[in-house]
Image (cartoon, rainbow, N blue to C red):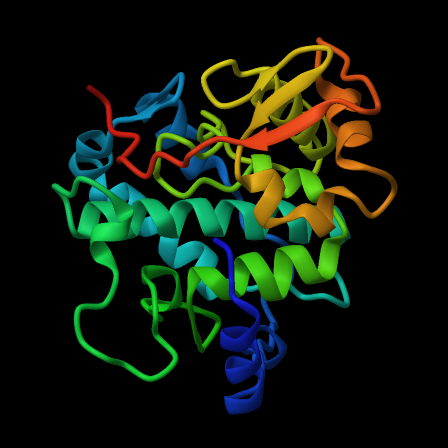
Length: 253
């Protein structure tokens, strides 16, 4: 989620990025087959069956252990293998966060209630390891995915367990399919009328496009980016506004 500049500066001054301390001797990338099976069983449309993940917790923990114990080897893994790994890791550990605290109305209910240095939100809690390094979701999103991959479509792939987030895909990301998967995620989200309302002269779009505007405008304007995926094409002078963000849990009703 959005990281304020001053808070980012404090993090950088206080410690080295966890991602830079990950040393891998894991060899080949781990299989995401277990996660794929769980997603197919427990994700439908824009809803997640967290009770289903709880009922399959032993199987789910097996996958979490697999990715924790097999961090990416930047010297050996392809960029696509690394990208698929980190997107799946973000989504899987977000699900873990929810089921470990279930039932919960919103992921924002899990923000710290007492002061902890450098832990301002739920995304800054270090509750899992990659290799032997303690990490949090914020580091995966900002210090790895956004920093290392120059891929704005990741914002349509990672899921924050909330209604206004791009829906969680009901299959795991894999290196051999990731370009197609990311493209489908972008098209689906941009044209989702519950989360983006686009017409010729105006658009009310997700705040994701405001929070991460630099990611979407590296090669042109936001309107040009939206027009790559939107069925309704915006005029160059179209008015852009941003919708309120609904943080309610994307739980199966």
